[in-house]
Each structure stands twice: as structure tokens, then as C-alpha cells.
Length: 328
Image (cartoon, rainbow, N blue to C red; front, side):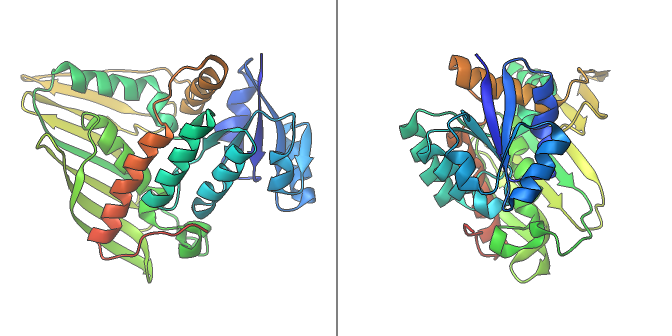
């Protein structure tokens, strides 16, 4: 049995995130794409070898030859079209951030639970062996009692007309880059959801952050810090560090280790490094999505998990004195 997936929107991320990994996955086929114009959908379909093109998102959701949809639309539209996909009986792989805010995430998570369909947030790094190894080391007690977790995703996006700076589409650095930093802080911090102690933003325009830092505290008592930006003095920073009473773990580029990464563990005066497969994290993610739909296997980035991440993001915006993002 093959899982037939349609793409909502001819997004730039879709070829790397779905089309390419599907080409080497015998359980998955990308069978359709929709865009706001049929010409754009047909151009995308031709370029990427997709059999069918639709001139509206509604037409794709009505396609009986589609089992699931990949939702890479702008942040503020994630909730609306995930909801529509569930109403059409489709499974959903939704790009992060899952929704515009936590209230919308709770609504969609409720619909997902009632639907019996798989709804998975596309934090692809979470399915790569590197992330699983960090989780394993933290849980093993090798680092001792957790004391602090620091995560960062900073990259330059100088095109200020980009939709990722658009408040009406739920833009902002904390949404686009910070969702990764928050999710890593949750995952590598022992699986706990932290509270936000303080947050400070640098603005691109009123209400829209180009950079954010936040201090966190976990239920077990350890602390954390997230840093994210799309335009700041931290031009490029992709990292995670976990500090415990017996040692520490540091990772450079935990998000796409197939490109390049450094993974090291220090304990009791010794240091070791570890290497991981170069297979794309998107491929591991697609494996997990197909396994969930076809065989009922659990996912690590469920709709319920997304509620926790969006709750922290909302708390960061409040602590920084900024408005929450709203659905588009």
C-alpha cells in the first residue's frame, strides 16, 4: 500500500522536505500539488514530476486520489488549512510552527484527536538519529542532574519584504526560527515544557520581532535559554548545549546534520565525539509519517506536542511585551 500525498501550495521548501525524500521511499508517492493559480501549480508539477495539478487548495482537498496533505503554507494559514484537510478526511503533515498561537493549536489538536487521522508537525530534526541520541544521553543520566539547556537558531534574512516578517501572516523570528529553538529546548531539556522567566525582542516593525532571547525554567528546576533571529549580530548560529552536574553535551547544527555537524560529550575530564548518518532528516521524517498513517505507529511531533511548543512561544511574546500572532 502506498501513501498518496498532495502539496498545499507550491512552496520553496516542498522539493527538499517532501518531493526528494518521497522519490526514494517506496511507501510514498507525491501525486498532486495545488496553488492559487493553475498555471503555477502546473509549472511546479512539471518541474518536479508530480502527476496532477490543481488551481485551488479546495480542489486538492476534494481529490479522492489523495490520502494526506503536506501543508507548507505561511504560518498564519497552517491552522485554517489543516482544519480543512481534516474535514476532508485527509492526514496532515504540517510545517512548523503548527499554528498562529496556542489557542488555535489546542483547537486543531482537538479536531485531530476526534478525526482519527494522523496530524504531525514537521520538525524533521526530531526524527534524525542525532536528536534521538541527545535524548538518549540526557535520559541515561550520563550528564548527571540537568542544570541548563541552551538552544539557538539564527540566520540572516535581509529581504524585509519576505512573508516571514509579515504580522498578518503570523510572522516574526520567534515563529520562524524560534519555534525550532523552543522545540529543541523542550526535547533536549528532558522532555519537559519550561515556563518563560523573561524575554527580550529586537523589532523589525511594530509587533514583529527580527530577534528574540528568552530565559526559561523547567518544572524539575533546571534553567534554559533560547536565542533566535532572522536579522541580528548573530548572523549564523545553529546550536544546542545541555549542561548537567557531571558533564555537558554540545551540538553544532542539530537541525540538518546531513550537511555538517559537530557532536561532543564532556564528562569527568574526558571528551568524545560522535558521528551520524548523512541521510537527510526530511527522509527520516517522511518514514515516520508514512509509518504512522500506514501502520498506526506513534509520532514524536503530534498535535498535542505542538500545543506545548506554541504555549511557550505565546509566553515568550507576552514576556517581551509583544502581541500574540493571530490566524490569517
